Length: 176
Image (cartoon, rainbow, N blue to C red; front, side, top):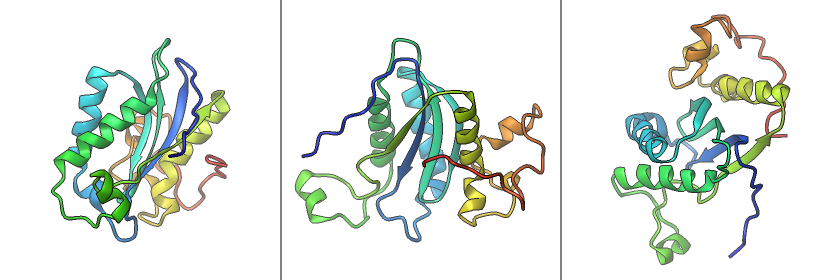
């Protein structure tokens, strides 16, 4: 099996993407958002991290985390979140032969994508990307219309105006 090398930088801020295995037509993350929220709460209680920004879409999610100084282990956190979520969801999804051999479920992709955020402009770009994602994927016309987003927490104190990210979404470079 391939060994993935990940950066090990204690106290860093990271952008993540996590996908369901079967993305087309799958709405599991928003249909069972209560389970996903419970998974995040449970893991954060035992392995703290600052959840800087998050958006939950039907078939994938994006978020920005900052780990505590001296801590760089985001992989364990994702493993625990994904495991908690999977165990709470009823079985019945399609399972490939390779997953069946390993006794795995077929709910989510095995891995996740991460990107180290190096500076404030990069942080701002990634947070904007997180919040604009429902518009990008055509789920809503305005960022404010998507309920499963930290955009609303940014809007309340005036970090974003109410109409931010509508028809004229800023140019976003996250993930490039």
